[in-house]
Length: 117
Image 1 (cartoon, rainbow, N blue to C red):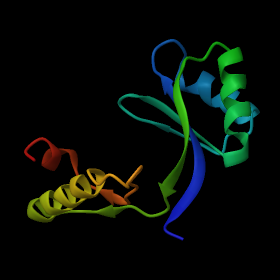
Image 2 (tube, helix red, strand yellow; image 1 turned 90 degrees about the vertical axis):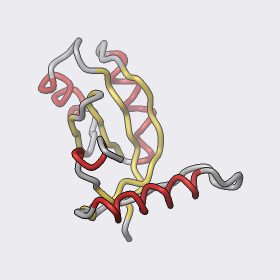
Image 3 (cartoon, helix red, strand yellow; image 1 turned 180 degrees about the vertical axis):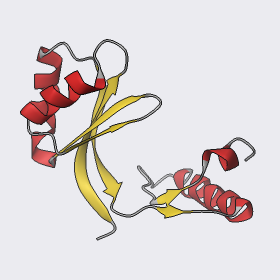
Image 4 (tube, rainbow, N blue to C red; image 1 turned 180 degrees about the horizontal axis):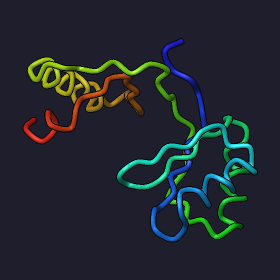
């Protein structure tokens, strides 16, 4: 209950405006959109991922990649630099295990911590 299984489509910024992408994504039944530094994230129902990705491509929207992911329902902000370092070390250790394919987390570390860690 801490994560929701969704489709994620990453779109490159630049060729279309956020509003144009939002309009087309909502026409295709996307469930949510978010703008990030890298581009625009379009969230879908898991079963609609491929259909929405193909529809966006047909509209000339540049899709970088797509995947089924676990999106956190609630983010926990880490406000202490030492705790943030411990959490990142733990996450790194888990990701290095041979049997681990993907790691999902619900923490949010402020950007000013990330530049010094």
